[in-house]
Image (cartoon, rainbow, N blue to C red; front, top):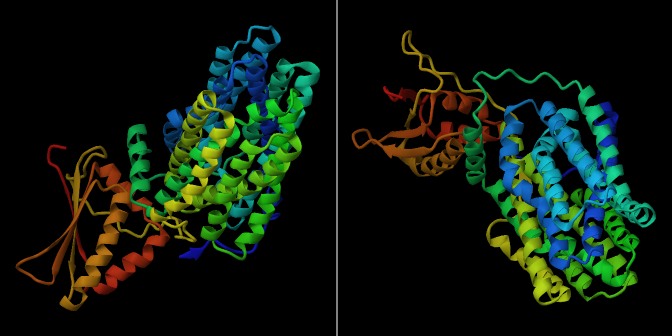
Length: 528
C-alpha cells in the first residue's frame, strides 16, 4: 500500500508540452463555458421566469451526465479516447453556434434556452469521463496529483474571470455576444487535440468489451471495491445538499443588485477562493491525511451555504463566496483525485463516469429540490436547509472513512494463461466458464486462510466473476476448493489482464497459508 500523501510537485506537469497546450486551451474553453452559463442564468432572471426556471438551468446542465455518463465512460474505455474528444467538441461547437444565433436573432425563449443548454451539456457529459481518464497519458505517474491540481487551478481561474467578463459583455453588448464568444472558445481544444500524437496503446490479448458488458463491469467494480464506493457515496451526498449554493446564487445576486456584473463578481469571488484552496490543499496534504481535511471542508461549505441565505448585501456575500470556493475545491479535488488513484486504467473512464454520474446527478436533483422549495417557501429557507443538510453529511462516516492510502493499480499480468488441448480451443464468446482452484491447507492455517480467501473472492468478483464460492472437501480435510464463474471465455482472459500489483500482498498471503502450488482447472459449458 502506498500513501497518497507527499510533498507538492506543482510545476512538474508544465514541463510536458501537450499538457501545457491542453491546459491553456481548456482555460479558454472554460472561459467560454462560464460566459454561456452566466448568460443562460441571466436570461432567465431578466425575463422574470422565476427561481424555479433559474434553478432548472443548473438541472439541465448536469442532468445529461446523470443520463449518459455511464455510457460515456464505457465508450471512453473501449474506443479511441482522442477521437471521442474530437467528436464531442465538434458537437458542442455546433450547439454553441445555434445558441448564439437564436440569441442574436431574438428567437430565444426560456424553453429553447433549456433545450439548447441540455444539448450542450450532453456533449460535455459524453466527453468528461474520457477527458479525466486521459490525464495519465499526458504526464508521468508521479506528476498526476500536481496535474490534477493544475486542472483545478485552471478551472477556477476561468471561474474567476469568466463570469465577471460575462457580466461586463452582457451589460455592454447583450447575451448573444457572450454566446458568440463561447463559440470561439471551442476552437483551441479542437486544434490541440487534433494535433496530439497519442501514445501507442498496449495491444489487447482479447477483443475490446461490448458496450453492455463494459457497463456491467464498471458497476461490478464499484460494488466490490469498498474504498471507491465510499468516496462516491459521500461525494454524491455532499453535492446533493451543496447544489443549492450554485442553483440559487443567480436569484440571490439579482436581489442584491439588478446588474449582471454582480452575479459575475460573486462567481469570481468563488473562483478566487478555489484557487487559494488549491494551493492550501497541496500544503495540507503534506501534513494531514484526507479524512480530517475533508471532514473540515464539508461543514465549511454547509456554513457558507447558510450564510449565503442570510446575507443581504454584496459586501457580505463576497467573503462568503470566497470561503465557499476555498472549501469546495479542497473537497472536490481530493474526492476526484482519490477516485482516479484507486482505479486501474482498464476501468478508469467508467468509474469516473459513475463518480460524475452520482455527484452531478446529485447536483441536478438537488437543484430541482432546492429550486422548488425556494419557489414554494423562500430562497432563504432553501439555503439554510441545504446548508444544514451539507453539514449533516459528515455523519456518513458510518458508511466508511475517506481512504488515506491507495493500492498500486498498475497491471500485474502474472497468471499463466490456461493450456488448451488441440481441438478444444473455445470461441471467445463461449461460456459460461467455471474455474476451480484447489488448495491444501494445514488445520492450523484454516481460519486465517478462510479470511484471506473471502477477501480474494471480492477481487474475483471485481474482475469479472458473477458467482464465487469456497468449499472444504469432506474426504480430505486439508483440501479447499475455490470456484468462480465468468460469463465467457473472453471475459476470463480479461481477468488475467485486470490483476494489479496492489493484489500481490493478498495473493502472497494465501500462498503462504497453503501448502504447495494450487491446482487450477478451467471448465466451459459444452453448449455455451
